[in-house]
Length: 139
Image: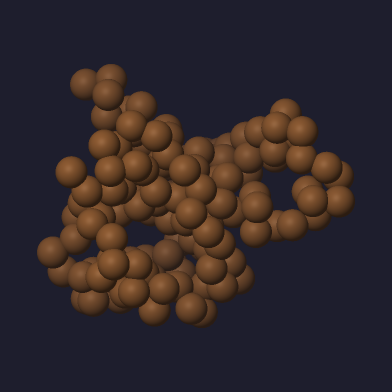
């Protein structure tokens, strides 16, 4: 079994999370400057066995796509061009930023360390991946 990779795409930074090889646990992987994301993914996908990619789908509270959706669609189009055989799907990412903040505080991260926005991106990607995994187990 390969890993599942989750992407919390941002205009400046992108958080990444992956499952273990048994696809049981979601773990934060890293945060990458978005301008370096495609190169990072090319390298990562060559080194690791990844079965599927899950991209956070940004929606507004009314269910409409957020303003970042055109950027994500452009990223996804380029990703699919580079990796045409890799299954990719979107997963609703509403509330992940709020949940990430609560998880970081509950985890006892010091206030100074909470200034690191890259940490929020990684935790958000992990929450997206965990929620996606749970949604698949429900069926």
